[in-house]
Length: 381
Image 1 (cartoon, rainbow, N blue to C red):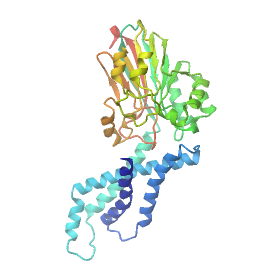
Image 2: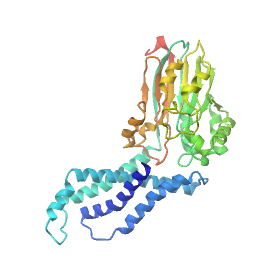
Image 3: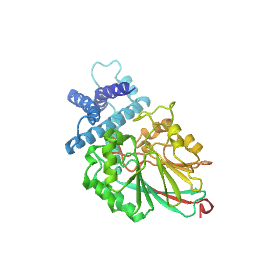
């Protein structure tokens, strides 16, 4: 599937410049643009693969960001021009030129379509890039039986500190957390996605929070080096929950290691052989406190329900991050964004506090979730 997708994009990089030239009525050779486009696409995936072998630096990160944005631009241009063809604009051009040995000037409509397409695709990429540099605060209320006193939690999965996000972005997020003044802060996986973030000057920022802080692993911690990341997290004063629980503020908080739901499920990001079906029942459940399961990916909900937890907090999906991912994500994760109230277990899925891949958001936003757990009898008051 990946090879097929890459071949389509390479074809696009070769074909789309020819189509644009035809629509604009230009005669100039454009093979340098075609070659550059192919090299950019191959280079983007090569840079992604190189993360395993090299320690990224500022230059590497800049190249990675640029190539990622070009990749999205190429995807959008491909989709736009296919839409133009479906509408019959290119067909009418061919009919108009039929039987003529000399090229005729294309109509104003085709020229406008080409110009609009280039401007629109570039504009969407620019808008999404700017949007990805900010975050929004969302608030949710979840009623828990047996909870005696309301608890405020800030849920921050998918910060993705590293190549694109560093100290400045983390400072702005933590400043907002201080303003909120929660009881608990949860870094629910993918806190980092590159070794560029593994610096004391970055992790020392976490020490400025008065709230209790907890961390669970995501798939990206394994790509970077789980042991090294966890050592930095603990050094920063954050408690790590690796398939274990803690009783705090009147709830039983159960933090799971990143894992798949069961043996039958497929996970493109599998990093270990652990599964929720087997690991969750091993954790003793409190009989007098409501249980909140914290797992990076919103999978295995039926096992969380069977365990008897009243709530589950997840991230991982980024809400699709940007179109067309916002549409595709629904086929992979039935619960991909927002609150899904259940008969026994309410599931809250964050869009993520950061981004991965192209630093861009379109149709989603970076999300700082404020979750207010309230006694069931006080819900909605």
